[in-house]
Amino acid sequence: MSDSLTDGRKFRTFNVIDDHNRESLAIEVDHSLPSERIVRVLDQVAEERGYPDQLRTDNGPEFTAQTLAAWVEDHDVKLAYIEPGKPTQNAYVERFNRSFRKEVLDVYSFSDLDEVRDESTRFQHVYNHERPHRSLDRKTPMQYLQDQERPAGARPPRDPPVVASGSRGGRTPQLA
Image 1 (tube, rainbow, N blue to C red):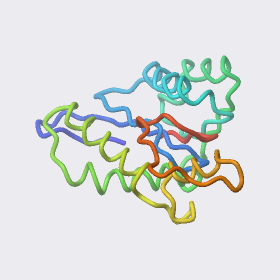
Image 2: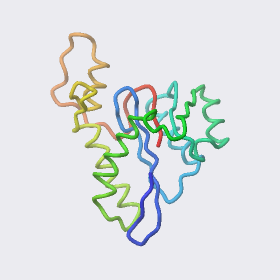
Image 3: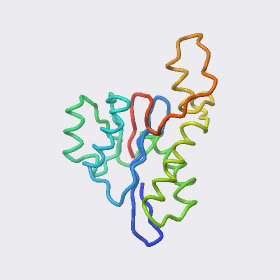
Image 4: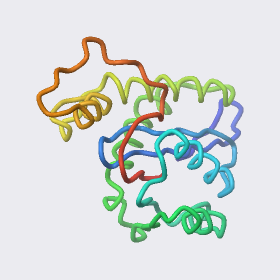
């Protein structure tokens, strides 16, 4: 995704979403996000979550570069590109991007990247911990994940822990 600061300088966001529980794993913000930066973010996510089986992404230059191709090969990750002009093949991240655009980028005027990062972190926390999803039986991504990890018949914890953004898990991140 991209937008502009109040002074007209462009910035981009790189959003990583988990297919399994719709969790936002990362929102990286900067003026430029080349493939080396994408790989660094994926390594940070993998430190917390392990490497995914597959990444689904569009055909942007940062995702078709040799750097990402080498990363997926080194970590035995399948790289699945959506067909050009078929954003529905990446539906979860497109849904996230629409919410992020409507609730963050279209609402606030940012004068610097730190403001964008701060608001993105706040949005990510709300999205993961406070916003129920119909596709998850009206649970938040974190509630859904906790239910998946809990043994059958076990009672939920009284106060779900607050988890640092991008730190718990699913299986197939989607990239945007």
